[in-house]
Length: 245
Ligand SMILES: *[C@@H]1O[C@H](CO)[C@@H](O)[C@H](O)[C@H]1NC(C)=O
Ligand SMILES: *[C@@H]1O[C@H](CO)[C@@H](O)[C@H](O)[C@H]1NC(C)=O
Ligand SMILES: *[C@@H]1O[C@H](CO)[C@@H](O)[C@H](O)[C@H]1NC(C)=O
Ligand SMILES: *[C@@H]1O[C@H](CO)[C@@H](O)[C@H](O)[C@H]1NC(C)=O
Ligand SMILES: *[C@@H]1O[C@H](CO)[C@@H](O)[C@H](O)[C@H]1NC(C)=O
Image 1: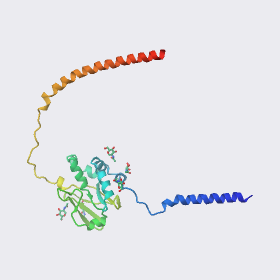
Image 2 (image 1 turned 90 degrees about the vertical axis):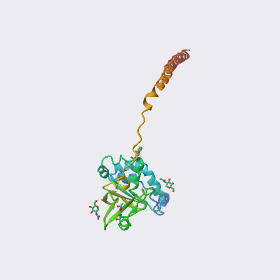
Image 3 (image 1 turned 180 degrees about the horizontal axis):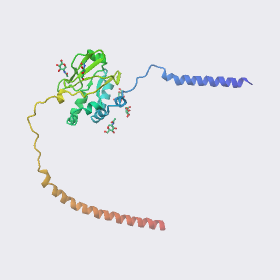
Image 4 (image 1 turned 180 degrees about the vertical axis):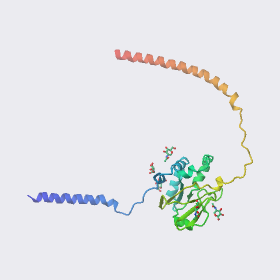
């Protein structure tokens, strides 16, 4: 009779082993793809990119980057100006831009290809950024030796700092200055046409008829209000009578 417990133990051992093996099985085949790259998380972890995050969010550039990372086989490189870089800008530089120009400024910090530092040391200048288009090539120049890499917009030159992330498909390098493109911040030829003078007709003549039209309806409303109140009282009375009867 001593054999039964032993065989039970063996049996349960066998089951627990096979369950274990089943649980392990799905993990075994090859490392799964690491899922979509989360640029927000990368920048938040960096801890000094609040302004950039806000700007990318406000201009919906995050979505564009995610779509591009998802569909491109070349990957992407992003230069991420720190909060300091933004606060060192001349006041109004950012707010002086239209939404479209803010997008262009952000796109000027992005390359449509994944580059390591060594790639960038060997690249042929200027490298077209994502702001390039109808308005021409908005390029960046890269210079340096060994581990010291500089990036230049023509107006601003700054060292490229150690990557926040450097795995394909996305490289993110912090920079301590905003890369100002000459196309947006360079000396512009003075514009010939002054802004059209504002018209003043609208303010005086048209408002009074509207006000007059508004009067009768407000009178109706208060009458309607009284009717509703009366209806409520009658309704309540009827309910009370219903309860009492
Ligand atoms: C990306 O990371 C941010 C911050 O950590 C998080 O709020 C957001 O939900 C993440 N997005 C995706 C698609 O996982
Ligand atoms: C992006 O903006 C929306 C509102 O426009 C806000 O709800 C959201 O929290 C913002 N996300 C980040 C990461 O700032
Ligand atoms: C990325 O592509 C996959 C399939 O190709 C799709 O299911 C997913 O929704 C895409 N994600 C984004 C953020 O576009
Ligand atoms: C890059 O370098 C070339 C050659 O030195 C120069 O002509 C061009 O203006 C520079 N462009 C930028 C964006 O710095
Ligand atoms: C990189 O740029 C800085 C200015 O931001 C300059 O002082 C330094 O000499 C440059 N280095 C190289 C290798 O060009």
